[in-house]
Amino acid sequence: MSWAAVLLALALMLTDDRWRALERAGVLGRERPADDDAAPPDPLAVAAALDVFAACLSSGMAVGTAAAATGPTAPRPLSNVLSRAAELLALGADAGAAWADTETRDRHVDALTRLARRSAASGAALATGVAELADQSRQDAADAARATGERASVLIAGPLGLCYLPAFMCLGVLPVVMGLAGDVVNTGVV
Image 1: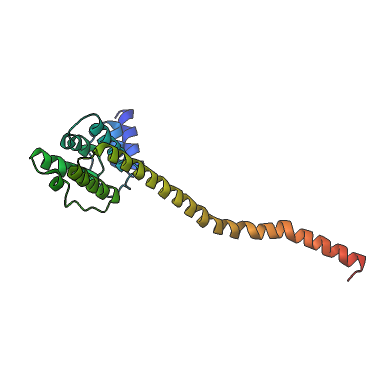
Image 2: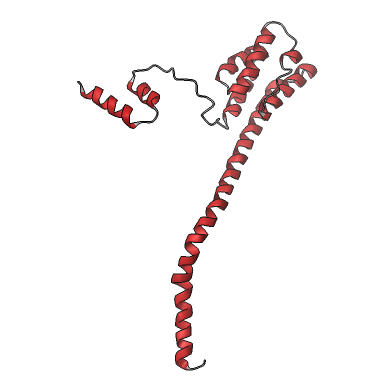
C-alpha cells in the first residue's frame, strides 16, 4: 500500500466532511450531494447577482438575455425568478406578465420584480434601478452584520463583568479599604 493511500485513509477517518476530503484528493469530481439548505446563505450573494444583472443590462443586453445570463449563478430565490422571467420573455410573454406572481421571502427579490414590472410599464431604464437595488442590498447586509456585532458585544459584557468584577473587588478595592481601615484603627480614631 502506498503512502498516498494511507494518508488518504487517515484524512477520511479524521474529517467530518468526507466529501470535501475526497474532492481534495481528486477521487471525486466536483459533484456533491445537494445540501444547499444546510449552508447559511451568503448575505452579499443577492447584491453580487444584482450587480451582474445591472452590468448585463448596462452593456445593452435585452432583459430576457440578461436574466438568462445571470440566473444560473444567482442565489436560489433570485435564480428562480430570473430563470422564469427569461423563459417567459424568450417565449414572447409580456414583460409585466413575466415578472408577475413571483412572491418570495426575500424582499430584495420582490423589489426586483416590482422594479421590473414598473420598468416594463413605464419604459424607464431597468439597469439603474437594479444597480441601486444592489447597493441597498449591500447596505442591508452591512447593517445586519453591524447589528450582530453590537448584539454580541452586549452578550459578552455580562459574563466578563461576572468574572472581572469580583476579581477587581478582591484585588483592587478590598486591599485599599483594609489598608485604610488598619490605619484608622491604629490611629485610634475609632
